[in-house]
Length: 443
Image (tube, rainbow, N blue to C red; front, side, top):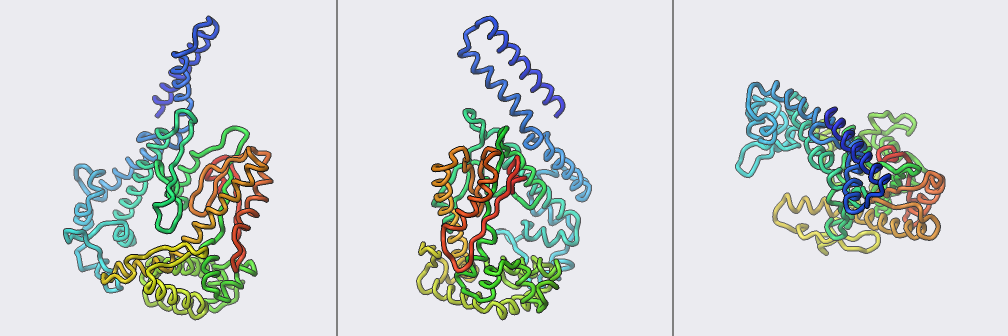
């Protein structure tokens, strides 16, 4: 890395000196001058981006190399460790876990179906490795390696290469008609899949910076799908929580665990948050048990208690599935149809997947409609009054802006107002704005 920095510095300095010499001698600038500008730009970009997107010899390259050594130590002597991390059979054999015994036997007894590949061998996909990682150090290392390798291969090795030579910026491509729910999808590069909950993902977001004198702002709808659920279900308790401005996860914990709101523990709130978002996606008692690390029976009891306290949610889910089976589609709040071709499939897993989608699609679809309405309303206001503020990115329920530092107060006040005013639901819409020198600090 030190040699690379030194080389970039020498090349850049040499190019600058040649440019100055040409200038003082009156040498014609084109076409050679354009090449020099590109060389100088390359050197500057290398210095700016290398700490974050430094390729195979950067921060993540060093960490991955260290992980390969650690995996080799856990595996024992073998050749081609990095390549074999993607081979499920090699992983399974090295774990020394007898199929049908030990950890896997307990998992199956608890309702966990061990997935198998098309050839019938036990799978070592992410779900299986996460379960094994609870008792074995090797699966945890493999998962960490896969995550870092994906982040490195998808983003840190490629972002600098994807920068437009004319603008010096990375420009994603948005598609309107790819996601079934109607959300915009991003590709080349996909900026919607950068992890936000991991330190590594946040480091990638740090690479998206504002120019001097400008900052990045992120405006994000707060708990948008839960608010849509409250609107669609009309459940009294959910409506009350949002109208009263309560912490909805704390309020849910109070209902499910039968305690006062001010007596809810952080652990109970965490459980309630998983339940709230899990049920939106049609999570089963087994899925909830896996997420919370509890017994399946206990998770089923939590779900039953939830539906007792929020009967409107249960009624909405049952009626939505029945309606989808009858009509073959569900609708967003705005009447946009989302078709479910597998809703009456004779194949059980496919039918179950369509039933989960029937519950979630109206919420995701309505959220997609709302963020698009917000983009139109916000851009109209920017064109009329704040042309210096640029809307540069949309990520699910989030809008990202680049703006002069002088406009920070305006955007904190006006953007939430505009985003909240695009639709009148049974609960208020709420948008929150963060500001910082880069995308990570703004979120």
